[in-house]
Image 1 (tube, rainbow, N blue to C red):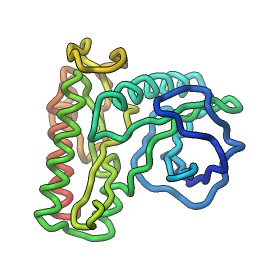
Image 2: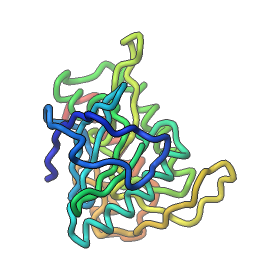
Image 3: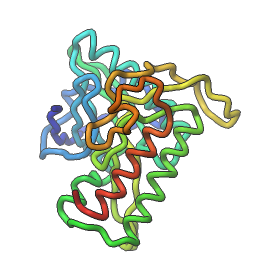
Length: 239
């Protein structure tokens, strides 16, 4: 699996959009370990960073040719999703340093997996609220003909609302996202990234849809709905 570290930023201004070439590892110092589901694509690592006002997550990709492809695909997908969604984690910047590539994301609390592990069964009100927000995030990316392909609690980042009464969710990790056709939404900003399609293995095993388990390569958007249902069941049963 990927290693997760937390970094603190001394400098490096976060720009308003994804802009490769902004900063460098020399600007960071490690402060703790970071949870959350930022994934296996490209051998990425996720780190936490502080800029002038807030912490952000930094995902690191190794320098191998396979990882470069993963980095470029995820960078393009992250930029498109960031420009066009409300319920997904946004990418803020990207840069290259010493043969490694990095994508900077907004930091959004802890993973739903961590919350489930620490609190056990969720009450139905909070579980339904999180499930609704997860379905809204899925609906957003599906509206642009994108399949997430790795919905699970570890890829759902949550934090408490300002009044501490509700959980606020954002979906993260676009390393396995697939685009199915061109985006036709006139409100979309940017060009639809044409990523890979029809992986041999889709998602994480406990959340993998039946058709994928049976080897059906014609899977489509319902794989995300199946995984969302599995995530909802885990919230209620803590397993």
